[in-house]
Length: 499
Ligand code: NAD
Image (cartoon, rainbow, N blue to C red; front, side, top):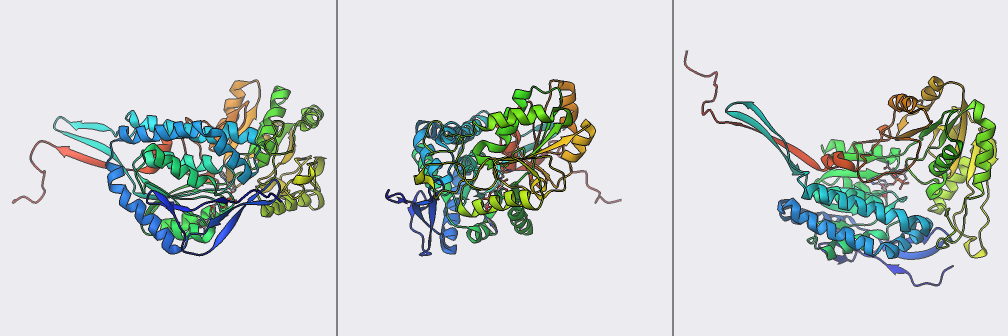
């Protein structure tokens, strides 16, 4: 166990850290060695009410601040995030268990990119509406208005990135937010609130509360909340969307996936293996868009498996801050139990052929013995009816499935209730487009996997979600339209005239 002093965190609303009135706390745990990192206060219902009231008070002035002025503040916050990249990434690694080689190059950077993107978008007129000339003396104009106080609910896998992907368009559009991070990775939230404040964001525009599902449930069903932006599991998303629908709240749902990667016989083998590995082992497989069903043409079975096995040696578990480490532990003890149960099920019940990994821990030093480590695992010769092939595991578990024809691969790829991501590897670009066109998923890649830049609107089809985040389309989820018809002819064409 670590002897480092525990970090301290407080709720944050009305522009300052605030004590919680619940008297309850929960611990943040370092997943690499199971040592406690921080004691986090749980928000009571009256704390949540107070945070929402602060956001509600801040809304009139923030929503009327000109977009260019909002943009300047958000740009400043993006610069502060970049300046403090390593410091923030360090805490993200400790909190989530992701290797510092990842958090220092991806997590903060891709969050800051989105903040910069939306600051630029609204500063450059991205909230302007349309004008339509109806006839000589009449026209319609539309205006985009912010929604009001919004709730942001985060998952634990990309903590600060998720907080930024939600708060950036929310605040840029003139809304205010109460944000609840996952109870497994809460440490980033106060830091982000402090950076926003330092950048000049007025008190109450971005607020933070902590707790588990009960706190999230209270927040998202609160009558003052106009919109819920949720990232998490399908089952939780369904509950949250259901309760929001009852109150006619706007919702965006970013949920789970079981995404297919289709590798055609002509694909560059090296690239296809690299893509499949990134799609399964990056972030220890805890990425929503993971391509966990890898469809390989039967003629390439031995070549694909051989090259994959060679490259699996490059997955390196180890201390989070070691430059060579590219594979961390799972994020929590509960998640370790879940992923381990799936691997056991794959071996014992699905009877899939274990090509690599399996039960047990990867080799790590003694001081990491108590961490939530799992081995990167590959099953092959899988069939569509196996549980490991059908359900989202959210861990480093690849299932390889062989196919004979493209039509068959596409049909099997689409046989799922989920539709988050999909991709194809081939040198034949016409074929790639034909396949992508048929795949039922909102996020698709050709000859690559996983990149999700600020400019790319991403969101799931089917049970994987509702709405999109990022890109020009992403801002639409944070505004409502008002249409106005102006008639200058001066005469209402009434039907109520004397006959
Ligand atoms: P989860 O659903 O267990 O929890 C997500 C958040 O919801 C947490 O903050 C939790 O406290 C809160 N919550 C739980 N019950 C709630 C309720 N009744 N009302 C309101 N809030 C509630 O998900 P998780 O395990 O933290 O995250 C992993 C899941 O997230 C995976 O399925 C993954 O695919 C998905 N995910 C999706 C995306 C995407 O963009 N599509 C991104 C990251 C993660």
